[in-house]
Length: 490
Image 1 (cartoon, rainbow, N blue to C red):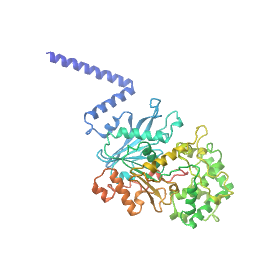
Image 2: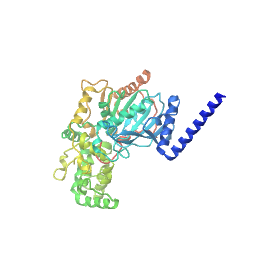
Image 3: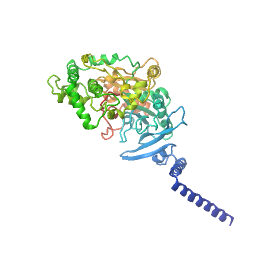
Image 4: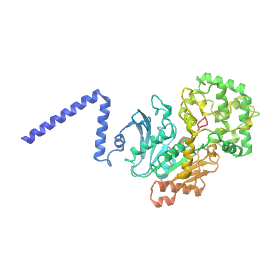
């Protein structure tokens, strides 16, 4: 009888608890979310190895689901992760940072892919992810929308804060993905992966950085001038230079076309200052943009400048530089990049002697492309510190550059202190250079090192072949971070 009474009493308490919880959750969405998270945490804690991967991800404090997209052979999630605005003062506000998880198996290695820019919400697979046949975590860089604190304190946008974002994500997900981790990224993503390694060298088991520029001394850019003096054939260099020069010679009629286009599109020029400054910035990008994303094989598609009509010159510059690049609308999404270029990363300046007497502004500094109300000052020691660290401390780092990519003119270099690290150039490749484009011996070594760093069995390392077949739906012949964008950005 006592047992029965005790059981009835426990049941009534339980019913009361459930009922009161139901009232609270109906009235308080935050309480409902917290209750749901507690339930997930309890379920995954009871048997974490058998819990659904979505439940395990959402049991992480600060993690929330944006959407799940089906893809054969994977689970793909787009998530928000709560991050401190300032990792030095984590109590002083947070923001939501988007990440994605391409989940294959928790028993596989994981690749942490960083773009240095925004986040694509479509499933995709980086080259190292395909090589190791693993999971992939991708992160949106802080201050690229929507991963921007509100209000935006731009002083909290620096490479250490961003590296600390990655460190917190890794720390949270390492409990689920317990095997080896590699970081990767192309262009600014390769820079980001390198900076992460500099500040948190114990997190990753290897780094694969593609086409990552290393502007150690911002005011010394002669390496770029030497590159443009020698790259490709003289015939192609002359063809490009002549088209660029012709555009400035025809500034009057081409600016009229530009103004008509801007009026039709509602494009404005408040950030850069004037249409004239934007016009010249686009024209001065022409040769660089051609080399970064195209190259010698399509040089014959550039019209003869002397006989080309105004329309042809205008359209040719647009095709390789993009008239929208330096409008307010074109710049807005890249404000975080230009802010970083003007405060830490540096940006290239080239002389272009063939434009002497025609260029009014020269290569404009990154500061010109950031709204004036955002304060900034350049910190020259930041890149010197990273460069020195890589030279003396690089361990299990692979840098891949394109032989015909202007950004490779100022690369990362390795010193005597580097261990199991490599710098390779893919001959003839542009800003889309990858391991597959290396000469056979270097391709085999790079693939083997990636596999070894990922902890795959020795026979696979010795075979030095990607473990997953190419899938055109999610694999790219070049990394999506290095796709053709107008405006000279890494």
